[in-house]
Amino acid sequence: AFDVLVVGGGPAGAAAAIYAARKGIRTGIAAERFGGQVLDTMTIENFISVQHTEGPKLVAQLESHVKDYDVDIMNLQRAEKLIPATREGGLHEVRLANGASLKARTVILSTGARWRQLGVPGEDQYRNKGVAYCPHCDGPLYKGKRVAVIGGGNSGVEAAIDLAGLVAHVTLIEYDSELRADAVLQRKLASLPNVRIITSALTTEVLGDGAKVTGLAYKDRNKDEPHQVELEGVFVQIGLVPNTEWLKDSVTLSRHGEIEVDHRGETSQKGIFAAGDCTTVPYKQIVIAMGEGSKAALSAFDYMIRLPAE
Ligand code: FAD
Image 1 (cartoon, protein in one colour):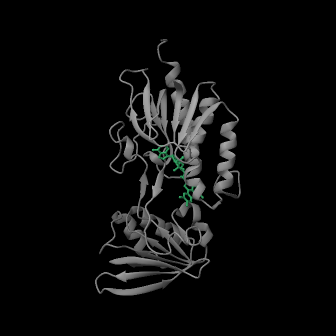
Image 2: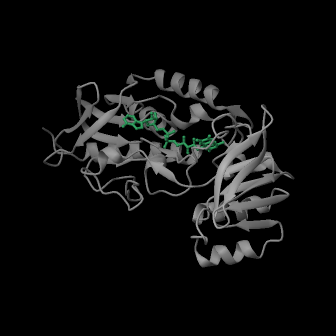
Image 3: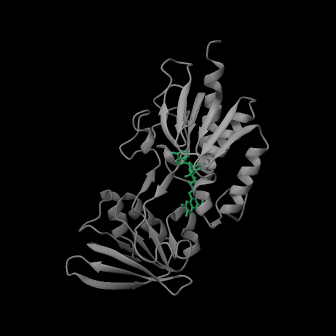
């Protein structure tokens, strides 16, 4: 059995594995795709102390750092079920899609999240070439340009306010007849001179010239009329979905499906910790995920040394 079994191999999981292994305890990491969202990222300019890097490069460095330690890496393994120990200090069980069962004294859940996609033509083609999902990450790349934000919930309106301070103009597109964000955010948005709000609009296509985004097509749902907006960037803000569907019977999740953790990263189950984008901790970022992963590993170690001797 493992002392610490990490499920998920993004920045949170890699940090957790390194911190755990540095305590000299038996550490394993099972990941569906080692690297996680970072593999899908082009430019990274906010990983503090590294001015500029690229996703695949950072993933290679994460992997080589993990491999410096005695960590059992199980890549391309999807966890399907978590069965918490029935008594404190007992072994938790993680079942994998390949039929294997892993046992561990502590588990760190770091299965991340995925951005909900529009599913319209052009979105995949121009991903990282004008189509973006993270305003904190990619906002500065659009300085002085025109962008659209799709989605009028809290994250969409926050993104539009944030971007309005950086870019030339923001068009906020909402499918519904009104925005769903908190009133205070809506008031702030309405006060900004370089923002246009379009409601009852169904985004139909991301337009481009083959190399990058040049505009957005939408349909006015009231008049059933097609429209186009010329712009250089599209931020999709229609939801971040945590990869926690497999955990709903084993740990407490928020109504958004995020794993609830306390300030030490512990879940509702003793000895089961969680870190990164799959948790309730706000601001989904690489540095934050790494910090939380490290914290969860230290918490798991603290938990273990307090267990009674077998
Ligand atoms: P993830 O990176 O999502 O990793 C989750 C891991 O869990 C993966 O290994 C996955 O395969 C695995 N997994 C999922 N389900 C299971 C399962 N059932 N069983 C086993 N394994 C599973 N952040 C920044 O700070 N700066 C940026 O510039 C930046 N740009 C971004 C650009 C894009 C396009 C995207 C999508 C995100 C960007 N982010 C950026 C956000 C950043 O990537 C995330 O905050 C970070 O990767 C979260 O780390 P994580 O380890 O919590 O989860």
